[in-house]
Image 1 (cartoon, helix red, strand yellow):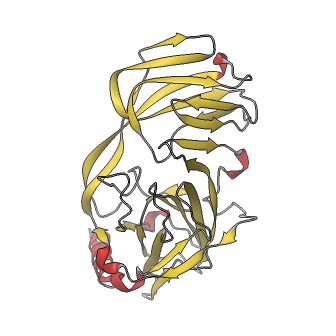
Image 2: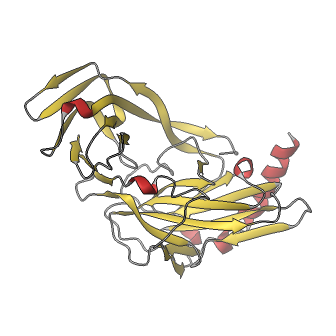
Image 3: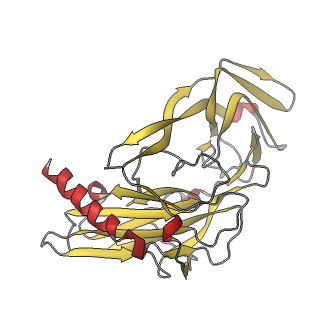
Length: 307
């Protein structure tokens, strides 16, 4: 209870000052309306903070990681009533439980809100208290590294997933970000238009894994049907697919990495699913499909300050 009260008071105090630091935005140097972006920064500490929060504002959707761990059990953050709305939304997370005593890597997976070309992608503040009582506060700036992610949006509302196996741990402390570039810094007074998702707000999470009811094999494709239908996405597990092999999974364009086992799925888009048709190039074999799952996503009212 004491930790909860301290955390609440700290988050309240930092939220009061949020209007000043949330004017500092970072982005990929050359932005467009479809590229998803990875951001990361490692902060060296002499000891583990006793309390740490991250306050992040975005015009798109994000996943936030600390030392490789997704800090939220929710998905496709923040919840937007209209998928094409790029209004800045602010969220706060207590990340104390993910911290290490030597260094901590903060990483963000960002997806733009299509069709907007938005130079204000994320604004982030990492703050907290050290064991000696000293407070700290760091803003994301041009020292942060970034690069285009291996998934991007497409103009027809789908996603394209290129799966290089060597980038699987891009958000961890052990990963060496070779060939990454510095983020572009932009100061912009937009605080008056920011919506603050502090602790109580609508959000989305995975609620059910659904197995297909049946499937039908055609000459060059295979169709899986789900009953009941659901809102979400389809995730498939492949085995012994060839490196560079291309698949179409209900509109998701997927390029295989050639690992023994790999999974293909949507990252930031979802749709109404009652069936999915899977097809591929000349190297595609139906025997490569090892598992098919429907991932149902539902909206709920989030009421926990921790995440």
